[in-house]
Length: 214
Image (cartoon, rainbow, N blue to C red; front, side, top):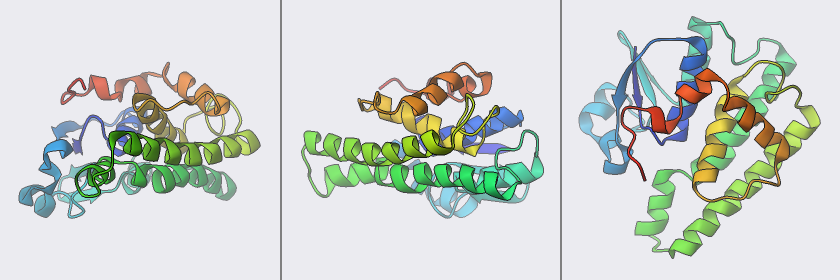
């Protein structure tokens, strides 16, 4: 299996966590989204028509979108399971995962921040305010969900799920961007617990072969 990834992409990060948890071997193929390698014709035509990272290629099968890939991994490599089979547990895990993946990440990813810079010509402090605002909006929701339904050292129990795979990279990115996260203690408990887990540690951006210090 080949993993097309960019070290600092939080979507790639969440998929690397899932692969590490399942102990699935892969060949790392770096795609530098800062230099638009994800828009190269060969990548779009042969790997990911969405022109995004991450993507996986397994024989004749290729797939983009991190949540779709993790769902596929759960089918092919069901241990450990990251999306529960039980209806209510599955719904709860997906609720938090989608909050991160659909409500926070898309409006704060690199292409959005570049658009703010290059097209809308916002000031650096305005871009930072944008980022912090949407992190705050999303993390308040995450914290409320964890306070109401969370249990154990992970988001929802004694073992990591898709929710943890999504939340940890989001918090890591928020910290990197200088966001204040003390208002989300339950979320930070999960983050700190995950930092001690080998799979989450191995997936860190700084440990990837394409890592470049900022």
